[in-house]
Each structure stands twice: as structure tokens, then as C-alpha cells.
Length: 139
Image 1: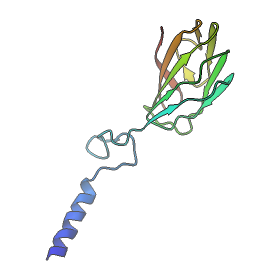
Image 2 (image 1 turned 180 degrees about the vertical axis):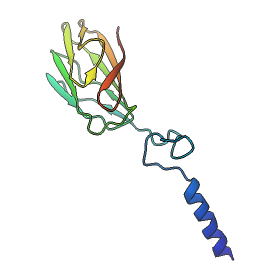
Image 3 (image 1 turned 45 degrees about the vertical axis):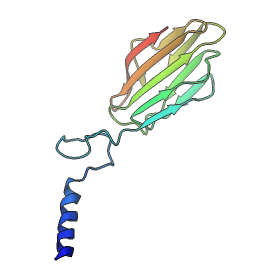
Image 4 (image 1 turned 60 degrees about the horizontal axis):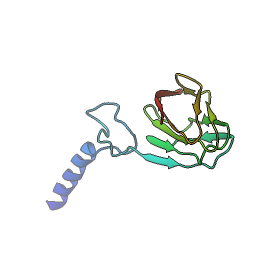
């Protein structure tokens, strides 16, 4: 009798347990809508005139080492999912710098100009095709 009860409990739990294989539920009544499947990443690539990022998390912060020359940023979105966010934190050194955004980074402008020792941030959200700019700021 105990074995039958245990089996019944396991059967019921298998239908109500959340699914952890997705970041967002497609139906609020099904799947995981708790946020427990959200992932976070921090990338700190060394400075290179052309930097390519491949985000693989719900929210990714990218802070390249100090921008010591012109910088072109490209994003490979092969691992991105709709709603993923990408934030860049950029610090120029020595002189004014221009950062150019790659083709799948869509925003109000394709560049951001930073004065010497200035910090700039750019934030994007993935729409299934491109990362769309949410905000930008400079201090």
C-alpha cells in the first residue's frame, strides 16, 4: 500500500514540477515562470580593435579592458534567446575614442564617442534577430 502511495505522489509531482530547460515560460500556467532559469554572465575581453562577443546568458555584462584605441564591437547571436539583455561598460584611456557597433547591434547611432577617461554604457535587448538598444549613457 505504501509503494502505491509513493508512486501516486511521484506521478502527481511530475506534472506540477517546473521545467528548468527554458528561460521563460511560453504559457504562464505551464513551464518555469519563477526566474530560476535566468542566467547571468560577465565578460572582460582584452582590448582588440575588433572585438566579437557571443552572449550565452539571459543578462550579459561586457567590460573590455580599457579602450586604448578605436573599437569595433560585433555580436554573434547564435546562442541568444528573445529577451536576452546585453550591456557594455566602456572606459576610454589616454585620448578620445570612438566605439563602432556591429550590424546586429541596432540603436540610435552606430557609434559612441568617448572623451579621455570617460565611461560609457550601452544596453541592448535581443528581439530574435538583432540586439535593439534600450539605453546609452556617458559620464
